[in-house]
Image 1 (spheres, rainbow, N blue to C red):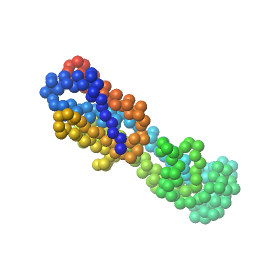
Image 2: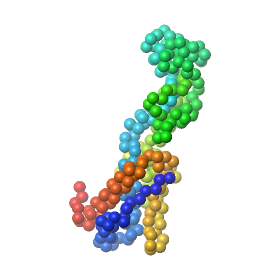
Image 3: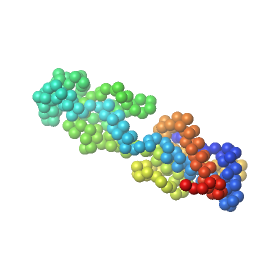
Length: 258
């Protein structure tokens, strides 16, 4: 779980907020709500990925590096032996995998020695992922998937890819969930809004007592803390502080809205 904050101890920001509270007759709780909403929106806007389609293509390429498909073997053989490629495809399609394997070992230089096995529900992909969650671009496939549909949408591999692509934007959805806890949200991309879940993120108001009123913002997505380093987190927190200062200045008449 990742917890973030906005620095209201900054004298400039604190003074702006105090002036705003006096001029608009607002409470400290209302000021904290605006600060927290600003923080949630900044993290939703600026956390990765910025481009969902680009990331979805990257996810597919990542998974495809862990597996080979019959169509890839066919194309590799066809480049040198069109007849051998047709024979491989025929025997693979009718389920004569031992024969197809012999043809592959004899004619597919890239895939020699690989087994033709059923899809393993993503186990190989999960094993091949590095510390950052990606398969190395130099990785070699570990086996050929026993499915003539390859990575097409109706194949088991294709459905696995689609399931993983559906998770693109999950970290952003965690910030959105925390933001929703604080009230109305706006300007949310549809590809982030489509991700549903009550446990992705939360905001905890701690307004009891006078000494330490605060709102804790949590992103509960499992890999949220791996999605950014400390430098990136600090940079987004600074952006949120700048946005908040701008809001107060506009409210106080010190700055004209664009």
